[in-house]
Amino acid sequence: AAGPYLEHAPTTPEGIAAWGVLKRAAGQVRAGIGGVYALDFGAVLLLADAMGALSPLLVEILPEIEPIIVRAYARDSD
Image: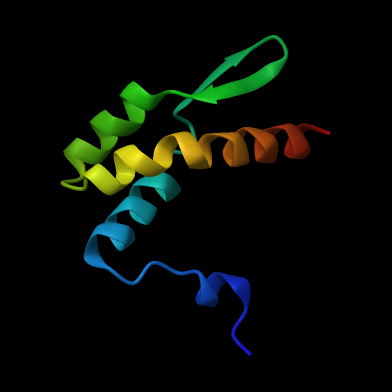
């Protein structure tokens, strides 16, 4: 059986482009003394635009993926 990475991999050009942006946006976060608390949406969208990958899909998934990324930073800091 395919693992979760293959099973949930993007298959559309728009999805593949959005995934490319998210992989490159690791440092585009808002952080304070308590650590990372949010994605810097402005920076992520500028990166996407520079990559030619700005799309309605990316704009739609950013709020959905943000808590997952923030939790990953928190987990990595433990």
